[in-house]
Amino acid sequence: MKIKINEFDGCFSFDFTPETMEDIAMLVRAKKNGLREVRGMFVYCNRDLSVNGSLVIGKRKEEKTAI
Image (cartoon, rainbow, N blue to C red; front, top):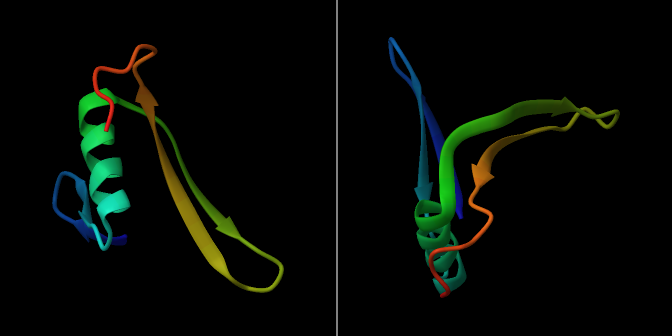
């Protein structure tokens, strides 16, 4: 999955482009079962000078869909 981050005056936008059927299913599950609650946003700077990050959102305890 490709992810692009855009910055606007009042927000950041994370845009997802699925590349496989599994990516599509993950986006649908995230939409159906994800909460509107950001639990964390992280940026990691590693010893080998690589950098990566993650965004964690809440999930419903009982899923609404199965794909």
